[in-house]
Amino acid sequence: MSTKLLKLVLVCPAELGDAMAETLLDHQPALPGFTTFTADGHGLTFDTASMAERVRGRVERRVFWLVLKADDVPALIEWLSGRIRHPQLIHWTEPVLDFGHLS
Image (cartoon, rainbow, N blue to C red):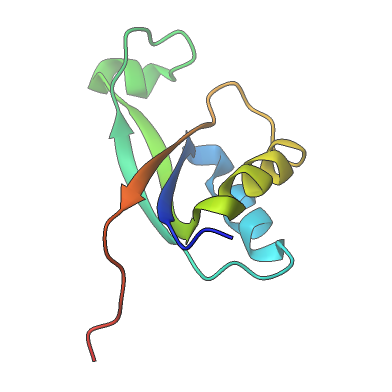
């Protein structure tokens, strides 16, 4: 088992934010925690954007950050894809060079 850590980033349309959070909270075994925030998405097309988003020139998104053991990420992505499917739900990983608590 690897001790390497990755930050898993999940980005979804705002209307999926609550369902995504509930799904992550339902995972067994429990996940170590995650961070959520609202962001504005900018892209090449606005085909699925609401009229308000088209006027603003950006779409509202929910972002989830999870720091996980690298070995656990593929299984979590597979588990999520079986529960929440949406063409605008995207993910990527980033290396975590250090992780700890300041206490």
